[in-house]
Amino acid sequence: MSAVTVIQAYRFALDPSAAQARNLERHVGAARFAFNWALARVKANIGQRAAERSYGLGGEELTPALAWNLPALRRAWNAAKPEVAPWWSECSKEAFNTGLDGVARSLRNWADSASGKRSGRKVGFPRFKARRRTTPSVRFTTGVIRVESDRRHVTLPRVGTIKTHESTRKLARRLESGTARILSATVRLEAGRWHCAFTVEVVRQVHVPARPDATVGVDLGIKVLAVLSTGDLVPNPRHVTRALKALRTASRTLSRRVGPDRRTGQRPSARWESAQREVTRIHVRVANLRKDAIHKLTSELAAIYGVVVVEDLNVLGMLKNHKLARHIADASFGEIRRQLGYKTGWNGGRLVIADRWFPSSKTCSGCGTVKPKLSMADRIFTCDACGLVIDRDLNAALNLKQYVDLEWPGDVKTGRGADQKTKPSLAGGCETPTPHHPGGQDGDRRPVTIGCER
Image (cartoon, rainbow, N blue to C red; front, side):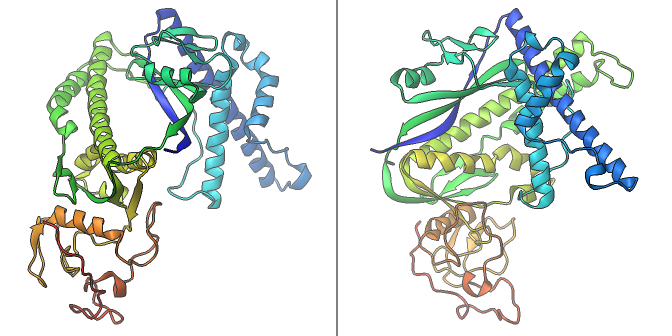
């Protein structure tokens, strides 16, 4: 059994005292202050240089540009902090470093996105952090960061030893055995509770799946969360739908309370804050139930099968369907794929991402014929060539299982998916009759001789 070094996080809920909670709030406030200070300084410099160019200045006549990297921002902060933040000594230097690092990362992402170096959706210019719209967070990378031996306390710089709401034995055991090393600790306030997440370098033993030679296709959906090529069905818990009645009631109660108003400076009433906590509690419970269900599903698949095949779904495009958006978001297809990615590696397996243009639902798992059209309302797949009648989702799962054996155009991809549609001449079937793709039953399809599993 081989070993591999990975970076993973251990997250624990905290039960800080009132004084410790105020200290943590002071640190996250310092991080937000440093972020806004650095961003304002950079924006002022950019604006000044733009104004000077409009006056016809250029070259050395312009105000010198400010460096956006973290070391330069840290040097500027150390020079200015006695004047702009005379209270800086009350907080750990890591609090200010958190804010400065956030500005450096945001500006780098914005610049890379604007220049085309960063793929994906366009990243906008960073905005100032507001106290009521920002998740309080601070990151510690140096100083005393440890998990106490009693497995009920953690120690952080300038904050001290804090009691945890749950046992830290999972991380403590690895630290005691020497197979883990803490790199940093991030403290966040979420839904009224403080959490501490330790980023840890862990030496993990790579396990062997129970069936290392077995391949399973996983077709994700809404009616059923996952259909396996073995015929097993994983029901969709629909956590949001179950909590919708309670959420509506709590939201109505919240709307009747006197809430905050930034225009007039009105502060929320105590009854509004109580109603807001109830709404938050429901959302947190739904999120926790969803995480638990997804972790159980992905852990079981990774522990049993040597190869797991899933589709490269365009989740953002699917969310544009307003009738299904809530159900798609509740199913968390992207999170399932993400967890399978690292869990299969931990268990000595492999995750295969089927090409986004692979017609898993339209292809017959028995003979390989591709149907020209298949609407979402057709839940039973009927093959016109061989007469196979099978559940649509099970047929897709069987095709995903066979995907690793098919000589599909291009190599099997494990990234975000294909960058172009699969060539019709090799994909099989007659989905799109074009001059170079006349259509037909067999002339344009590579024969597949894999039998059908029922």
